[in-house]
Length: 118
Image (tube, rainbow, N blue to C red; front, side):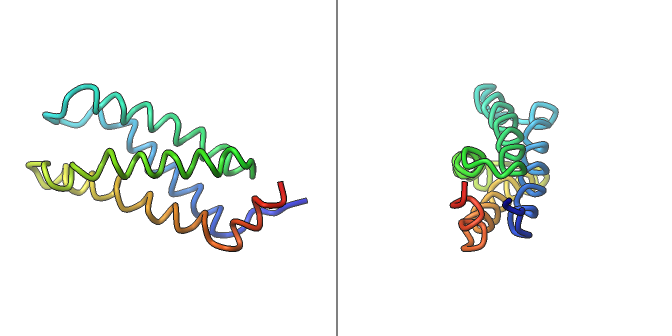
């Protein structure tokens, strides 16, 4: 029986928080095209599914976490430059930096050993 390591647990919590924030993106005032806003929502839902898979120590959860984290970084990075207000830049920074931390946590040797057993 595998046990969830501390880095994986911390990654699940961060993943859930950052992608719950993604679901709130339509509520924020923005000049982004609606397709970008809707992509953020779809990515938010996929991130929550990834968090559930990661929590249950499924290998697909690990891969989905990696995919949605990279996509979230790519989607949020332009906001760091083009966002006109401070709140939007902070939101973009959180959406870009936290997935990097998640990637670091799930690729640590202890985390990889956890998922290698499945």
